[in-house]
Image (cartoon, rainbow, N blue to C red; front, top):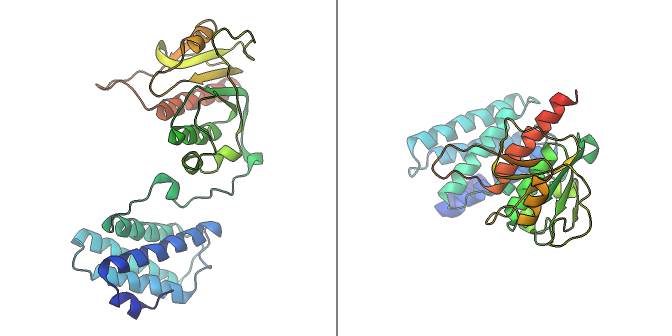
Length: 284
């Protein structure tokens, strides 16, 4: 860790970036040790406190920001005296300063940079709704694919089926957004609704997330079925819609704004949560 007197002599932007980096590393250590504070020595808490004090004296920060730095300094000093096991306050202090510094130096964090327990997911702890399957049809954006995997994992989806032209779940952007969920949710790549496809779809209970359907609050979700979520640009294909219309039909999310549409991963999240809640109530 760089001595404070050397830190003070650095050019302002370099100094802020250095402090931000140190705090980011501290956050990761905190998360990796399951949120216990005894991984930091009293010397480190003193450094955090002195760095926060140094930032509070920076004339280029607003009074509101300086107040945040002072609050963080007080938090760090309290841990020097009493390193209690509950580290919620400590984590917030580290996180708050880090984000202020990253914004000040023009480097905002994306969602996948947030400190989390990714890489430590245990598939055995998942609650799965057997027969709850999803078909992602031509979802082109790796970000959307990753977000949908993360949502599917959260709400008990048993299996995801990707169309041949879906973005790769192992694309680095998909994996970052999924935060480890691409490794624990079962998935395969397979075409279900190709034109003139003679092979039967593996489940008769099919429904599509699409406009012009039954409002989500009135839809009766199946115990075993396949939810189709279609392309960001074109929606669900005619072949897939025909299969859904011949089965359970379409589920729609009423919108009240002028845009009257949602990002596919957001709409998917709303629908899968409603499906899981329906199964939870009707299977209990």
